[in-house]
Length: 304
Ligand code: NCD
Image (tube, rainbow, N blue to C red; front, side, top):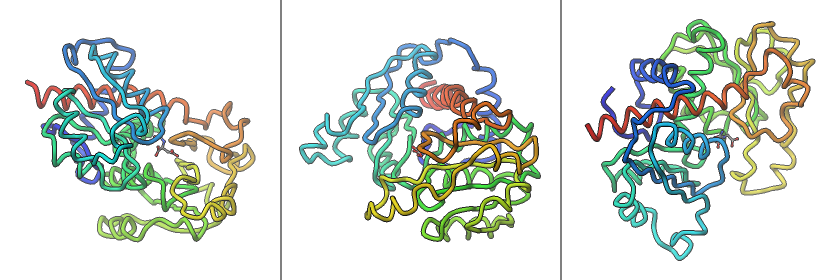
């Protein structure tokens, strides 16, 4: 694996994914000096808990240091500075850049202005490639592999960048079937369905959840993405479309795993948390190790 930047999961190869999974496994619970002397710029122009803090924990565990923008309104962007100018300047201050931005395509724009290691931490409703990597890592750890699985995505298939990113990675495997469950207003964009068709992956779309649960090996729940709605009334109408309760989980195979990128609002009830099926807190922990693997690899590829 020789890349130094990651803006989308669309160009990841299966070899790269497998390399990173192995690396994440070896880094679990470790402290190293792989980023010794390196300064990371952690640029979060959009709210984040897990992605920012797990990245920052990963940098510190690898012996690096960092500075953070946790709020766009604390930067000169508030004064009208363009992203291009900001990146031109910040890339001189940091050795590795991690960026989340509300605009689709912002990561692809940013890498026009830096050759340094760069990682997309989410660009609008477009892509969230490190979430996809930690998700595939989690599926591997929970079920021992990906080939042959049926994966159900539930909730906001339209705006959910975690879904969009994970689809590209799943398409590198021989998954049995992908099931999209969403209200008709929040259907998966055709673009992704075309990609699945091209790769010969079977999929199904429906708005009803319960009847499909028995088939699923992974039930990937998502939040309705309030911040992406132009019309908040529509959000309030769709909010609560799917609530995963313990009864619904019990319709599934005992081995079915429930995943969620988090944060949850009301779409998984608390009583599910204590079920064997609930993998979402382990999933968020896996994010640290996968982000360590990625930071270590991209930095090594660029600086050595
Ligand atoms: C996701 C995101 O930001 O896209 N969260 C995360 O990174 N763990 C999903 C979400 O916000 O619903």
